Structure formats: structure tokens, C-alpha cells
Length: 223
Ligand code: AP5
Image (cartoon, rainbow, N blue to C red; front, side, top):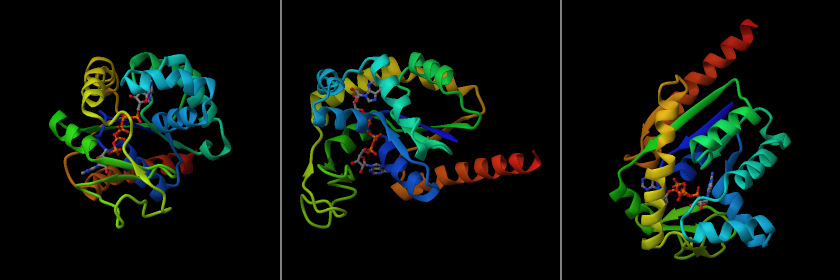
């Protein structure tokens, strides 16, 4: 099963992706995390991506598609995976469908207004080592500045500063939101209200996934 998490920056794709991974066992494949790892490792991809990311712009389709294809060809993705942050425009969606068709696909579009997105991104912190996501208002760590899971330092992402947040939201509305129209008329599309608490949003997502997974296994049993 391919689970595509759509939604603007800060809507909770990463947070919900981690919970889906934990409950259903599908690995979360985050284009942003993979790009940040490449930047940290100083690879050729990382060097090219760093310039775009620090300005809140999208990295080139070809680079990102190659990176995603490489990741989802790994053995742990064979029964399914969660895409967080990819596709980011119609061209990426079309290329993905052509290169890696999926019989069982679901698109979960987490919706949230710009005001709440800015608030959430401004107070987000992530673990410098394991990437665990925190929020100074909604989900602070037990020990200030330290990751609850691995004890490493929490940092603010370079693109979580006001000017870059504004640019990322603009780019979302100009280039990524068109994906909603692209997917909306297909029965794989589900809008999810991102306003509630993390567990309320996850309850909604779980109810969609439980139903779909039930239907898929019934179909498999009939075959
Ligand atoms: P990426 O890392 O994908 O960033 P993004 O899409 O901007 O999304 P975020 O990670 O900022 O937010 P999120 O929706 O995951 O929210 P989160 O769960 O963290 O991309 C970064 C950059 O990489 C891009 O700008 C681009 O340059 C490049 N890139 C990536 N993919 C690309 C692609 N496909 N093509 C080209 N370029 C690409 O939550 C946010 C905060 O809110 C956290 O603090 C969290 O604790 C809190 N929170 C979450 N849910 C709730 C809730 N329900 N209530 C209260 N607080 C909540």
C-alpha cells in the first residue's frame, strides 16, 4: 500500500507519518528528511538541495524522484510505505505513477489554515540526531532542549524562520496545492482536518486506513 501524505508545511505530515509507521508498520519515507540527511552528509545531492531548502524553494524534480525511487526500492518498502512531502507538484505525481505504479494507493490531505501553520512551525524543534518532532507549545520535551527518545540536542530547522516559512507557504499555494485538484476526483483522496489534537487527527486517519486495509485484505482473500 502506498500512503501519500499531502498538506502544507506544518500541517502535521511528519507527526502523523511517524504514528502511521508505528501502528501499521509501513516505513515513513520523508523527502525532506532524506534531503536533510544528504545536506548533513555533504553529498553532491545535499550541496545542490541545500541552496533551495534554505530559501524555501523546491529541489529539482529529477533529483528528488531519483532519491525517492532509490529509497522505495529497498526491501522494507516492498509491502508498503508512507510518502511524506512527495509528490510536491503534478509533474512529480505523474512521474511517480509512471515509474512505480501502485495498485493500492491512498492520499491523505491534512488541511490547516496559514495562521495555525505559522504558529506551529515557529515553535517546532527537532532532534539533531533521530529527527523526533517536538513543539514548544503543544509537545515540549520532558527535559528542556533535549530529545526524550535519544537525549540529543533539539534544534530549530534552518527553514523554520519567519521569512522562509512565509516563502514555503507561498510555494505550497502556488505549486503544491494543485495536487489537491489532481487527486480530489479520485476515490483514493481523503481530506483530513488537521486542526485537532495530534491523537484526534490520528484517530481520523486510522479510521480511513483500517477500512481500506480491511477492504484490500477481503479482495486478496477472494483472489
Ligand atoms: P519538508 O521537510 O517536507 O517540509 P514541509 O513539507 O514544509 O513540511 P514540514 O516538515 O515543515 O511540516 P509537517 O507537515 O511534516 O509538520 P510536522 O509534523 O513537523 O521539506 C523541506 C524542504 O525540502 C522543502 O521546502 C523543499 O525545499 C525540500 N523538499 C522536500 N520535499 C521535496 C519535494 N518532493 N520536491 C522538491 N523539494 C522538496 O508538525 C509541525 C509542528 O506542529 C511540530 O512542531 C509538531 O509537533 C506540531 N504539530 C503537529 N501536529 C499537531 C497538532 N495536531 N496539533 C498541534 N501541534 C501539532
